[in-house]
Amino acid sequence: MMSIIILAAAYRYYAGLAEKFGKTKWHFGILAILIYLGAQFGFGLCFGMFKEITNPGSLDETSDNTFTFVNLIGWLVAIAVVFGVYKLLERRFQKESFEKPSLEIEEIGNKE
Image (cartoon, rainbow, N blue to C red):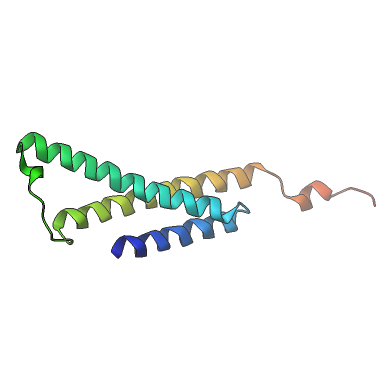
C-alpha cells in the first residue's frame, strides 16, 4: 500500500515538472514509476545478494511479515533516487529554457 502512495506522488511530481516546462506529462509520470520500481528492484537484488553471501541459505526461509526494516530502507532509497532524478531533470530543463530564446524576443522587430 505504501508503494502505491509513493508511486502516485512520484507520478504527480514528475507530471507537474513536465507541465511546468511544456513537456508531455504522462511520459514523465511513467518515467517516475519506472525509476521508483527500478530503484526498488535494484535495492532488493543488492540486499538479497548481500544476505545470501553473508549467510548462505538464509533466503530459503520465508517470512509472512509484510512490513520490515528492510522495506522501510528500500522505500527511503527509492524515494531518494526518484528525488535525485527529479532534481537532475529540473536543472536540465531550466538550463534548456535559458538557452532557448522565448517567442516574444524572436518576434521583436518583425513587421506584420
